Image (cartoon, one colour):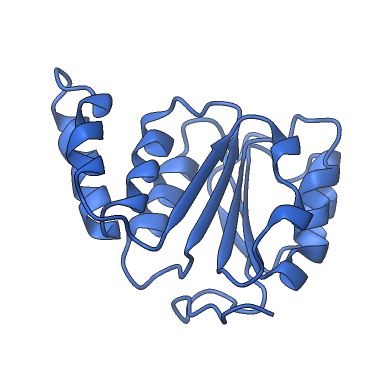
Amino acid sequence: MGKKFNHSEIFPSNPMLVCICGSSGSGKTHLTFNMLTTPNLLDFNSLYIYTTTPEQSYYQSLKALEYLPKKDVQDLFHYYEGNEKVEIKDTDNYIEAKNPTDIKVFLTKNVNDLDLTNIDSNRKNLILFDDCVAQRNQAVQQEFFTKGRHHNCHCIYQSKSFYGTDSMFIRKNANCFLLFELND
């Protein structure tokens, strides 16, 4: 087994399987971004993000974790959020001029790109599934939630629904819940 995670004591540590539920616009992605970029909150050095909307500024900003400390990524995001005339892509040269950190970020919109057999179990892997509750086939998500710990993977599953039948398996296996107002 790989390195032991050292999350903040408010999170389960072996394994951390978080389910964040809330209606559209409730703040799930904002919360997750802040959790990922707050120093000493979540411990990881490989971040895998599955989302149907990889173009979101939150996810584009998280790629900077490969070159900047967590707090700097948070500050950079808030700077660009407040300056609409400057695009986040304008920072690519600035970021890539920095020395790489030990964090690797993988962003995909194809859930089948996530394969447990290709995960380096010597790294601290954090897998984020963003709003995939509408997918009929949850086999990949279920595999990570049940077998991921054997590959040193912890998971965060964001969903618009708490009671949806497709998310029932995830809900039964999660050991931490963060709930926003729900419409279901």
